[in-house]
Every structure is written in C-alpha cells, then in structure tokens.
Image 1 (cartoon, rainbow, N blue to C red):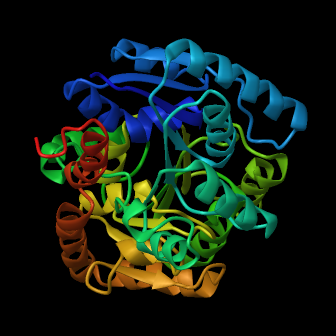
Image 2 (cartoon, one colour):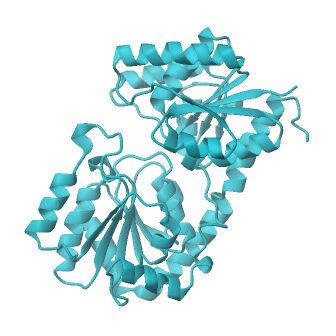
Length: 383
C-alpha cells in the first residue's frame, strides 16, 4: 500500500529550504508526497523537483477570515487527494492543517515544531490541546522543546521525538570545496579587501534576530579595529511591520559613515560561498528553535558567536564557539573582539565546530530519525 503524505507549511521557502531532503527520501521509499504553502516563488522549484504542489491561502496573521478560508481550502484538498498522513510545519499551518485533517478524516497527523512559541500564554494552551487531541507524533528540533512536551504531557514520551535540527548537508557546506582563488574573486566582487576580517550574519534582517545589537556592537569595534560587517538575508520578506528595521539600519550607517564598512547583500542563494569568506559568524537572536544558519556556519569551520537561548546553546559548546546573554551588546562586542585578537584560536574553534555538526546535526541523521516513524506507519519499519 502506498501512503499519501501532505507536507504543509505557512510559506513555501520553509518546504524548499528545510523539508525537501525529507520529501525526496520519502519519494525514494515509495511514498506519494504532495506539498502546500503560500506561494512566494518556491512552489515552482518544488514542482521542478517532481512534487505536486498547492498554493494555500495561509497567512502569518491571526485574521479569522483568513484562517477560515485556509481551513476550507485544506479540507477540500485533503479529501480530494485522499491524504493518509499530514506532516505540518510552522505555527499557523500546523494549527489550521491539523484542524482540516480532523474534518477531512486524515488518519495520521505529525507536527514538526521548529521552536514552540508560548507568548502570549494562550498559545501554550492551544499547542497542548492540539497535541493531545489532533496529533499522533511530535518532532522537535531541539532537546528543550522535547523535554517540555513530554513533561507537560503533550503526548506520551514515545510519540515525541527530537530530530535535533532540520539537518545540515555537510557535503555541500564544506570549506574544502571553495579554493583561495574563488574566495579572492568573491571578495573583489563585493569590494572587500583581502586583509580585512569579515564579521558575518545570515538570516532575516529583523529586530527579533538581534541585528541592531550586532550593528551597534560593530560601530564600537570599528572605531578601534579594522573589520567589515556583512549582513545576508531578506529585509522584509512576509514580516510583521514592527519587526522591520531597514530605516534604523540605514540611519546608523549614515550617522557613523559606515557605508564602506557594512555590506548589505539582501537575499542570496550562494550562502556557502559567502560563509567561506567570513572570519566570524554571529547569531544575536532573541528567540530560535534550532537555527540552521548557525549550523551552516559551523559546518564551514567559522568561529561562531550566539546568544544563550534555546537551540543555540545546544549547538554551541565551549570547545567550538562563544555564547553571550541576549541583548547584551557589550558582551557581544567583547566576544567579537576576542576572536579578532586571537586568530589562531578562532581557526581552531571553527574546525571543532565542523566536527560537532558532522557528529550531531548532519542531514542524514535527521532524515533517518523521521524515516523510522514513516516506515513504521507504512508497515515497513524493519526494512
């Protein structure tokens, strides 16, 4: 019997960036895989990979009208496709998707939690109810969320599985694949001098990622030391208005005359190449599930710095990176300065970081944990 699986996320980039390797593995093992999300251009890429897709009218807002519209659309799709297993990602999609699956009589509901969000407190009660009433398995991307879900009895312990991140392709994120000439050409194309240390960040350019903290720390560091800051990521991709900080960043750059020192690259696909020319990678977030960008930087042997929060503190150990308290700009500044003044130590910790990713966070390990559940559901658990 071929089981039909529907992979659902609020926006399509989540499926393309984080779920596609699992979808391919499922397909290789004779599952029928369909996916759906709000289309921001990545559904076409998923179709090119051979998957049937649906553009779902999902929104990150909590508008009742939008939620009801999405609910009815998903119920119709699930019934039409005769879905056996729904696998949901991201909060809104997981909520609406599991409700739709209930009404469409989908047998199995699996929820990958990319970091529980319990603010306001009502979200905790919603998550707990949805888990107990409408979920068969929970996959978490970090140990802290798994422990909480078991402790609070969201599901029984055997139904809550920590897959330990969404997984990193260490064969792609490999510093050995990018030679010195390619790095020099990339630096030249970005107008970065060969002898200038680069402090890097990859992620959404928003307030909650602590990007302004990083910029303020860099302003202070640049007064004393030669370095440049590279910010890679979308500025306003589907963001809530209060989280967008483009005007603040441009104002700080102008006031401090840092136009030549802060490189704003926007969205890029060549992340491994850009990481290869960074000397230090910083993730100053206030909230994370299990950040992929940090693991990618670690896989590329970068000296990393992160905040002492869920997810990040599971990725970084004392041997392979530095951790400071969120919003502590002075602590961030001291961490960056430490690496800039201790180059050999930064290199050593970067090498240790890659080994940690290979051992604990490789994509093969993550997919294996999920496939074990799917194969058992299909009756082929021993294959």
